[in-house]
Amino acid sequence: MTATTPRAYRPPAPIGGRPGARAERRRTLTAFAFLAPALAILSVFVAWPMLSALQLSFTDASGFGTAEWVGLDNYVRVFADPDIRDAMLNTLWYTVLFTPTAVLSALALALVLNSPSLPFRGFFRTALFLPFIVSLAVGAFAWSYLLDPRLGLLNYWLQGAGVQLGDVLEDPVLAMPAVALVAVWKNFGFYMVIFLAGLQDVPASLYEAARMDGAGAWRRFTNVTVPMLSNTFAFVLIFALIAALQTFDQIYVMTGGGPYGHTQTIVMEIYQSGFRKLELGFASALSYVLLIATLLLSIVQFVFFGRREKDLA
Amino acid sequence: MTAVTARRPARDRIRPASVVTFLVMVIVTAAVLLPIAIIVFTAFKPIPEVNAYPPTLVPTEWTLDNLARIFTELPLARLLLNSVIFAGGVTLCALVFDSLAAYALARIDFRGRTVLLVAIIASLMIPFQATLVPVYQLVADLGWINTYQGLIAPRAADAFGIFLLRQFFLALPRDLDNAARIDGAGELRVFRSIVLPNVVPALMTLGVFTFVNNWNDLLWPLVFTTQAQMGTVTSGLTLLTGPGGIIPYGVMMAGSLIAVVPLAIAFLLVQRRFIDNIATTGLK
Image (cartoon, rainbow over all chains, first blue to last red):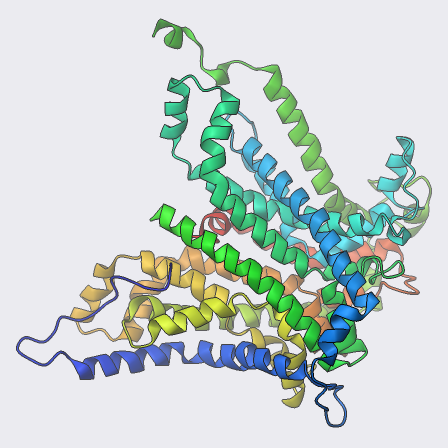
């Protein structure tokens, strides 16, 4: 994969000398001097907390007093507590709403932007990417206002078109699509530029060859674009899946998990149990469930990443 | 053959399909920009007009009242400063530490390199939300809650940045630094005066990306700061919403505008290069 570098610097062996064991020790020391700050930070604030969270997840730690070992109790609760089960199902439902919408709209817009006959391509690209620099929290304010049942412009316009949305964020059915929409709005532009880069990597000669063979626009799309873009597609898809699992910001702002827990997600639960109710052990067990889900997705992603890299090499 | 040459190039004709595509793009773009437009327009709209029915997009009368009032509702100047220190500090530290580590992993041949690289790639997969509780405990034990170092230190190096920069360093030709080494330059010299200047666009992209992500992050400042004075713009604004949120939308949108404007300016200045790099380098 990416783990080895075939042509790293290795000074020529001294003529007639031994194979430079001292030089190698020197290089190792230099390398670790370069690595030291980053390794220190990553060990203290990533590696150690990961082990610490595992240990915490088997205790009833609360931030006060001594923590007792409770075995698998927290994990049993993760899967038995109906609220947590709901939060997991909500996260899944959010993922189903967010991922295909964000990825497919990004792909569609990238395909349109990639056609040279479209005027003002640069403007469209910048404008569509712009929401990516707006925070989810600020995006959530704007969308909450647009969707406000009395003062919201979007609600008013939809009423004009005969659609009565009511109070979307208080609606058990509509609240989740609304918070997913905010994330789609923020993120599709990022996925779109990744697709655009993927499309620009497709050699023009392939399209020419297909044209020569008499392939129409649709055939060129299915027989050239789709296979050439499949790795990029898989990469973006998993990127979006991981983002969906970790969703928090706009839900915190727009609904706080409501109405009646209908937008409560795993990270919302981690935040509330860990930092509001101070159930540190339980929050750690929840964190590990999130960690393992993310890890599985990341491993799949790295397989594609490796493939893509090989393709580019 | 004659058929091919007789056909006029597609771009000389205006086809109905491309007109439709163009119109669709105009509508989609307008819809995407609507939330940004509502922030900008509402920030300058007098409160009575914001509360009037039917709602409007563009103010009939423009006012600076909302922008003035947000500064009394929140210690906004302080929050902006906090955001700059937090996002700027994380960006600066991460760029320095990540590039140093990436250099060692890409350009120096040493024992244990592969193991380290695999470990760093593995840590790339750990979401920060999953280690938030123990990191919080650690920062609390250090007495760093409500401090800049508490916000910055845990993010002062970043596996993604190391990985990304390593890819860039690998792509540089070896002859560059080997020549310098033969001339007697030490590794730090090679790093600073030969390798780094060749990856400035990558550093800029990673820098803007890191800055934007931290400026916009909500969960992190929410967890590591408990005093309103130490929050960021993003976390501070959320204090105004929620139950009993009596803050008028005009004031909320003024705050949102202030949170977005610095990023929007930075982005529009570097946007072409930034979008190209984020797309092509984000994955390579």
